[in-house]
Length: 231
Image (spheres, one colour):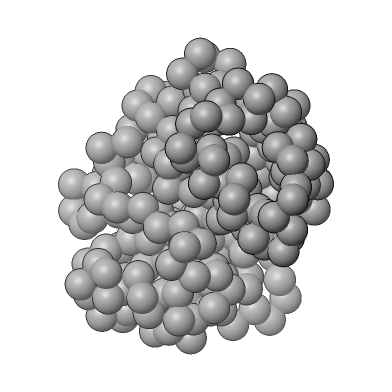
């Protein structure tokens, strides 16, 4: 029996293009000025120091760090300090109305229905702060209170089964009582290996069906029934 749902964002609840073609470029464009304007902010200083540690170079200037962060954006690095500073920049964008997150209609309707039945959690490579910003500034309004918790890569890689085991422990359920939804086949495999129920979401503009994929694939949340056969 499904007692909780764990959901990916990019390509699952929302189109990939928004993150890749809107949010990423916005954070890159604002990076230099944002660091310059907020260099005395303790959070920003901590991020800068983390980048220096990762690069093993304590002599990097703030301008150097900004360039490294922009390079990581281009390389689509899943690195915590990058995700955190992007979250701060996106906060600025969402709060000023320059950014508004699109949600697929079927995902919106199903999540609205499911939240009345079981708790829903988010697991994304974007920081928890960015996730909260995303869902509090959607094109369908603020749906932040639909979710019972948020997980990012600080709990572990989305492609490692141990991450899903840790999430299940945090939620307080057996992995077999959790349904994980994602477009990424490697994430689906990792969650399945951890013992979770899994369904791969295949949006026509975001992904393709994989022949002989060992787990269920659907094109819409409308095809998923919590009490139905998920295999």
